[in-house]
Length: 223
Image (tube, rainbow, N blue to C red):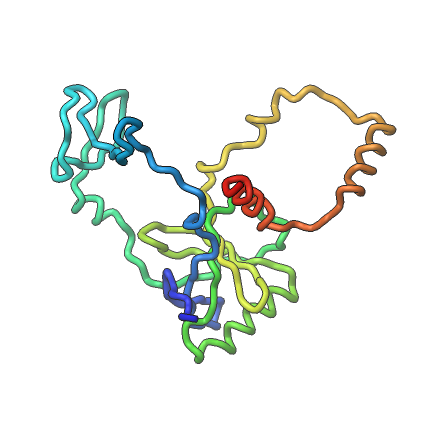
């Protein structure tokens, strides 16, 4: 079996301890069931085109630029060169800024997970020290780096023989729970109904099996 290929390589730095590491994709959508859009009459695939919202005319790729809306229908256009200048320089350092208890990070901020492992044998000992210390202390690390052309906060936690690095959403990307729960009526479960619910939960106790939903879906499509 071919060795996994790192999506990103850099250095994990914790104070005076550092080691070369690589990030490897931990979640992929490649195996999802996907549909294509077809022409019902011919059975051929159809494709999208970019058209001018006002004229309806097709816009070729070389005429397309990115723009930021500053008002309704009012945009500032940016050339690729201008956008490139705004991209922060990557120093390839995953710099740990703080350690926090595992239960202090709201998982609503979790974004994309990556397996984090040493990228060279020379870093194995330092990597093991960081991993084992985090596992023993039941803590996670919060680090910052430039990842794939964006400044990102990354949550790092011990996982099996390695580490999991989870990119975090920014505060403005996560909506407050108050927006969803503010109009909930005040209610308290009846003791008898609560006992019944707990009984049902106990009867349904099991284990998480991520393969179950995919297996059921494939069986439905193949039947």
